[in-house]
Amino acid sequence: MDIIEAIILGIVQGLTEFLPVSSSGHLELVKAILGDNSIPKESLTFTVILHFATALSTLVFFRKEVAQIFKGLFQFSWNEESKFSAKIIISMIPAVLVGLFFEEQLESLFNGKIMFVGFMLLVTALLLLLADKAKNTTKDVSFLNSLVIGTSQAIAMLPGISRSGATISTSVLLGIDRTKAARFSFLMVVPLIFGKIAKDLLGGDISFQSSESVSMLAGFTAAFVAGLLACKWMIALVKKSKLTYFSIYCAIVGVLAIAYALF
Image (cartoon, rainbow, N blue to C red; front, side):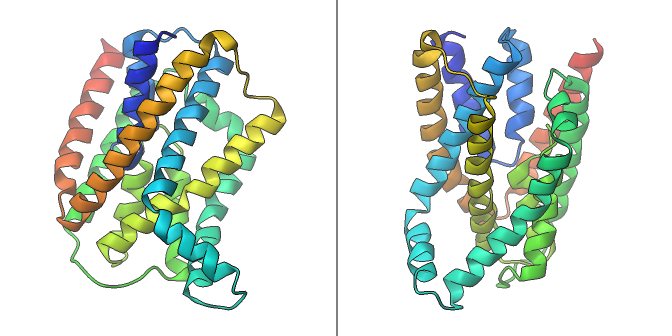
């Protein structure tokens, strides 16, 4: 993988991780267009590095909130920070279960299944359209809400289903305040990403080669910077109920992906 290709994939990952258009789906599409010839293990390593970059950009963007959460946790009392952390943990349960019991089936879908990605992008488009029509509220995330949103996150492990799109849309449809929905959506995925990285490292699924270090660093940097910009942009867009534009975009890309797979 050359540096230019790595930067392109990094930008795609950074933007689409937070914008509701499916980062996994776009990575598969861009890899197909660029003719990615990486062997599965090298491709997985690069994908993990890109996800680590976007997780890090989330922590940097929400650094004040994260600091408050840790501060509240170390008070060892049932305060707002402890409740929020508990909701994050509850939201992780569905995705952890899917990852543990259906990992091989999921990985088989990340192998140039462009037709499948196209149809899942259409599902994302429908979710975003429904969410944009929901009324604005000031409701916070409840414990039951966190489990439902977590289930959406687990479903969004399929390539083409936008994780942020699915979780934010689900939150809004549940009547949760849009800003709080976006904040919860972005923070709930961070522990999962770091957990996945730790699992892959301990399991030997990630292999680093010195010849790829420059490309991987370039991709990491591109994903981190793009992630910071996209995170800020997405929160502003959710507040202003602009998800319909992304719904149209996902529908167009979904149709094009299906056409690409067919012809």
